[in-house]
Image 1 (cartoon, rainbow over the protein chains, first blue to last red):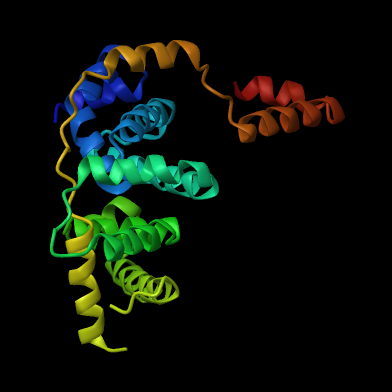
Image 2 (image 1 turned 60 degrees about the vertical axis):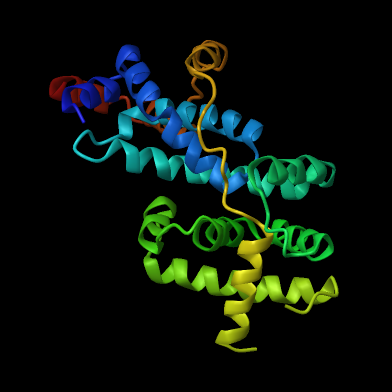
Length: 178
Length: 73
């Protein structure tokens, strides 16, 4: 990455910001859509992420990786979104449509069980849901997730463990014994 | 509840919710970003405002410090 470009961005140069935006918008979108699993929401959150990035430009250290910094901000924006949709019950159907739009589930799992798993999964606390999505579904490495969340690998392992246990409890309540 | 049960649940989860396939961005978001930058003014952090208020209050309460500050500037 051009260090001069990063320095100009940190000083508030809009052209430098545009260059970085064009280079990283796809990567940021891909990371966010993997977490929120809703393409329309992911586009809005990509914009929100870059808005936060632009606002915090003076705090960016040009010696550090812009991609890693952007990913951490994107993860926080995605987590905020997950917390918000949890508070809005009417958005459940939209979220479910998002799941259907981005994923092709295995036909071996019957629709009823799949629906119960999706519902239980969506009601996990945002931080656990994000870790479970990235680690268990998207198969991202724990180190990668830890960096994006700004936590240790041990914390990621712990959240993954708690997510699985909580998911099991929720599924039992829905009458599914995995 | 043991590790085997957990592993079975992980497998079931992967079968029920497949990895995201549509990861590519179809459109360039820069025009929307530009509109957003124009419409949303940068908020002034409350901490900056509090610090400025504190500095102003300090100068009002201790006007004798003003020449000293000017000297250092």
